Amino acid sequence: MERDLLEYEKKLYKEGYKLIAGTDEVGRGPLVGPVVAAAVILPVNYYLEGLDDSKKLSEKKRNKFYDIITRDAISYGIGIVDAKTIDEINIYEASRLAMKKAIEDLKIKPDFILTDAMPLNMPNSLAIIHGDALSETIAAASVIAKVTRDRMMYELDRLYPMYGFKTHKGYPTKKHLENLEKYGILDNYRCSYKPVKEIIEKRSNEETIKQ
Image (cartoon, rainbow, N blue to C red; front, side, top):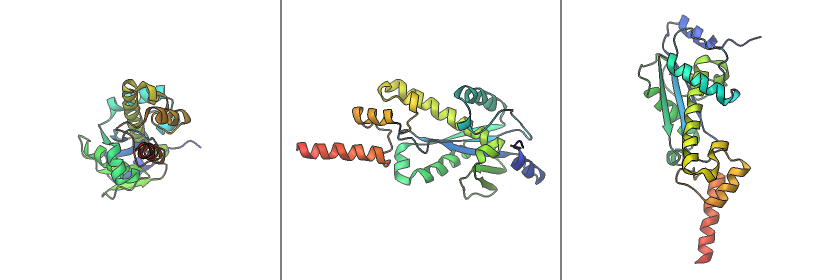
């Protein structure tokens, strides 16, 4: 049976809500760079065939949907929380903060907010487990967030090609960890993450031994 990606939205339309914002974040797992969230308000009963959770789409499809969504959306916003803040408040709270920033970035105020699993502790908001696969609006936000963050990783790759950001997007792949060991920690690495923390401690111990 085919999923109805507008199931949640249709219920809210019946209750009188028209400006429904979906929000989602990407980038919890990477060792480097920000966590990025997007919020999207789509027209009532808007349906984009083939749209799904961004993780299930090819990069080509994500880029295609990104162009369509940014063109058709009533409004969309982006929220970015950097690595330093992630280290200070933890990735869970940073993800929530990124979502709230994305909502604040909307040019039009939503009257209801759907989130992917994350409770925002805001009025008129609902956290849906696996929301990016169950709600058209959240799926749209997941695409905007993913494409935005990937483009940031491509820019970082241009500045530091030896790390391979273009390929692994900052996730802790074997090659990434090897490059991290070889070339060291950049300013925008998340120092609270175990692989980064271990390299920092190792370098610190080596310096202590030298002294």
